[in-house]
Each structure stands twice: as structure tokens, then as C-alpha cells.
Picture (tube, helix red, strand yellow):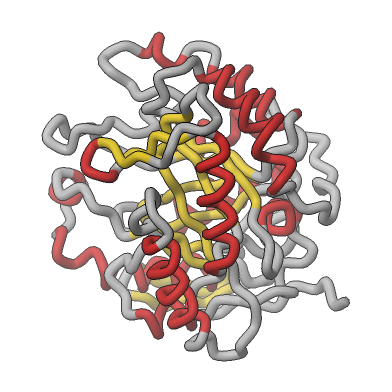
Length: 345
């Protein structure tokens, strides 16, 4: 199998383009589904003490052989939105977690490409990728919190166009040697961007539509992260299967590109508790048997990775992680791919 990474221009890449990328290979393979955990493990509710001890639980997630941990990107907390998100800056926090873990993929869900300049995004992303030995998988989005755009001096209505330009600019920065870039977001010539990613490229996973058409996502994304539709009945995964099939039919080279979805989970200690929607369907309360059934339905639908958020769980986070590791993860094991690249910094 060819393990070289092609130079990225404005388009996405299909497997085996990332066959040498440890983070991507740990998470994704055709016809398979792996599991990740969304951070934070408890929502911020006015005190940073909510996040105390989280890094030790992330180390446990790594030791348990989950595929990935995910961090969110929320620059400003708007009480009207009702969710402060990760609180920590995603790139700074991933650098911290890279030093506390060994194998797990480090994923953003998702970095807001419309708010920041692509040089800054690329500098932070490539640095973390190098520090972690090639474990960064970069979920990217156009942003959905209106308060943030005027705070950056940007128009909320222009976020889709800025997102597409930022993706193109970011990819051009990954090319080797002296570069010449002419973009609405900036221009330069005969300068080199450093550091380069550890494995030659960083996967860009587009979130939802990010203001783009389905053909654009099929052409430009290295993978697609979408909301799951309803999760308490089989109809939701069936509708999701149709969406995934429509997207994959448009991928120009017909190659494999992974699909991801997520669910906020309240895992009952009763393994037979039925799949029950809470908070208007935003949260799923279920026992582990119902969760395994849902994950199997997602795998059949074409989902390759499921990111589970346990922020709403009534049980302690450590207890939920332990049950997931012992009783659910063996059904959906992480992939054995290339070892983490040497990163003796």
C-alpha cells in the first residue's frame, strides 16, 4: 500500500492518503466504527472546579484504548446560548493533553475556521501535531454563535465564504518549500511555513454544512462530521444512512472518506434501560445494551466514528468511562495503525 501523502491544494483526500497518519488511522477504516469521548466531562457551571481531575480521566481514556478525545472551540460564552463548551482554548489544551497521553487521537470538534486567520490556525495545529507525534485530527466549522463574530470584527453573514477561503489557505500552507499565496485573507510570496505536520498533512473534517453545499464537502473535506438525527429509534440512523450515501456518491475519486457523528449520553446503570430522548432529543438516556444497538445501527449506516459526550450523565464520569471501556468498547475497538511518530521534544 502506498503510504505517501499527496500535496494538498484546495481539495480533500481519500484513504490511503492518510495511511501514515497515526491519529487518522486509529479512528477510521472502511466499514468499521470506533469510539471517542467529548470533553469536557462535566459542563462548566460557574466554577473551574468542575474540570478538576479531568486530565487524569483523559489518561484513563487513553489507557483504555479509546480511539480519540475531542475538544470544542468556544471563544466566548454567551449565556443565551446556554453552554460554555470546553472553556479552555482547544489548541493549548490539546498540547497539554498530548503530553499526558500516548496513543489516543486528539480531535477538535470543531475549530472555528471563520474566526481566526489560517496562518495562526495552521501554526497551532502543526505544532500540536508535531508535539503529539501525528495524532491531531482537525474538525473544522464556520461557527454558530452569533455573539463571537462582531467580537472579532467580522460579519456573521460572511462566515461561509471566510470558511472556504480559510480551508484553501490552510491547505496551501502545508505544502513544502517556499510558498506564494494570494487570497482574500492575505497574501505573501517566497516564505516558508513551519513546522510542517508530523506525517505530512493534517486531516480536515468538515462539521455539518459549514455554509457549504454537499458537492463542496464531497470535494474539499477529508471527512464529514454531522449531527446524528434521532437516536432513540431506528428511523434516525436510517435517515443518516441516506445522508451519508448521498455525500459519498459525490466524492470525486470515489475513495473512502470517514463519517463521524456524536451523541450526548446519560448512561443508565440499568443495562436494559430503553433508549429515551431527553431535553427535546438533545440527550439520550439509555443502558449499555441500547447504546450498543445504536452504535451498530450507525455502523451499518456508514458511520466510522462516534464521539460520546457524557456531560449530562447522572453518574460519576469515571464510572461511566469504566463501563464504556469494559462493556461497549470491545464491540468497537480502535484500529491498529502506524505507531505514534517519534516526538522527543
